[in-house]
Length: 293
Image (cartoon, rainbow, N blue to C red; front, top):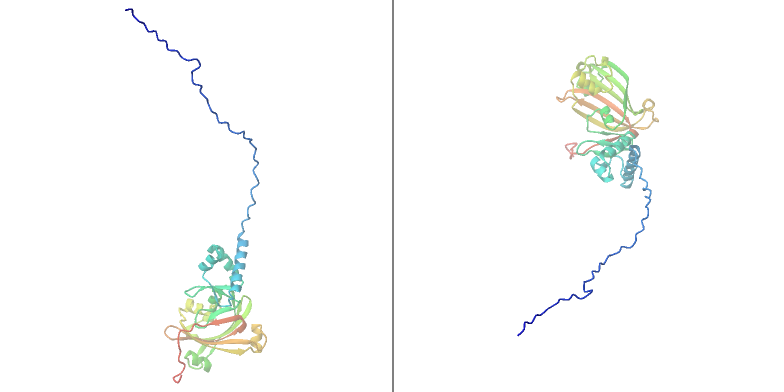
């Protein structure tokens, strides 16, 4: 049997190669436009310190008017008012300085202190021995003192009784005029035992701050005082010196001052123009005036 040869030819079909299709995403054409930057909005001008001070003063006045605060009433503490207004304490102090110079407010220290409404009158506590110059200075006023008369004389019956002296004992008699920011405020007449303060009348400016002179020159500290207050009408002489019409109301304070050991050092009668000062008093309890009360 003859050999059979199988001749197998593997044919590759024509055009059988796979066509590769490439899909290309074509982005839409973008037109680039040059952007011209717009003008920045105008900046709000920053207030100057003077403008800020003026605005704070305006707002404080509005608080006083809206809350119907009257002279002597408390606006608040510096911290509380700064928070209420939303300003710094430094800016508030600048405004308060201006208002205090204008005598619209006073600033008091202590537990009951704070910013107090003022009507331009000097505020004096009736139960204090603080000197008038110190009170005025603390409230932003200028107090000028003119010594009208200062002599070495002898104690009258009234003076001797109040100072615990024998009638005729040598005493100093002083008369002073006080002006508050240039306006007459008070007439003060004082008597002091001469033996306690030798050569006092020769000390320069001794009458400007009498208690200061006693403390600094003689080491005598006034620690207590008894005062009586009443009202009288200005005489022609008083009216002329205080620049008020005759018959104007005056507040009279009669005072006896003592050292800590009870030694009398001054008997005084002060006359204040009633329209230029306000007196305050803190009541601490019931005071029995007589055994039958």
